[in-house]
Amino acid sequence: MSIMTHDPERPLAARAVRISDARKAQLERIAFQTLGLLSMGSVLTALITLRAAIHIWHLPA
Image 1 (cartoon, rainbow, N blue to C red):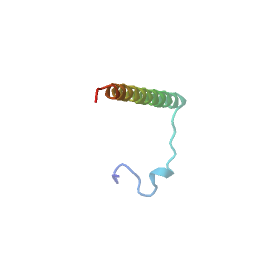
Image 2: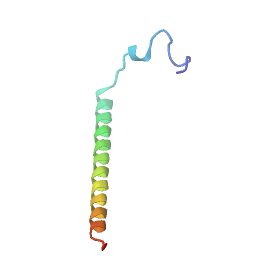
Image 3: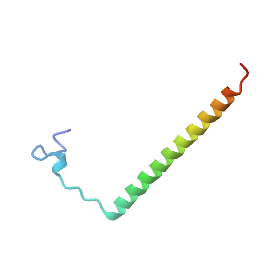
Image 4: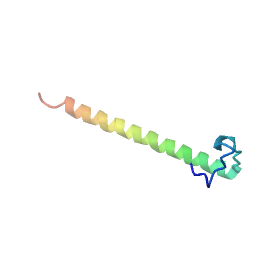
C-alpha cells in the first residue's frame, strides 16, 4: 500500500465505506450475472465431458 494514498494512522478496514443503493444494486446484478455465467460454463463443461465419455465408451476395443 502506498503511504501517499492511505492514511498510516488508520488501517483500511477501519474506514467507513459508503455505497449508494443504486451502486449496491448494480454490484449485486453484476455478481448474479457472473455467477450465472460460471454456472452455465460448468454445465457446458459437464455436458462436453459426458458426451466425450459416451463416445469413448462406444469405441471398439
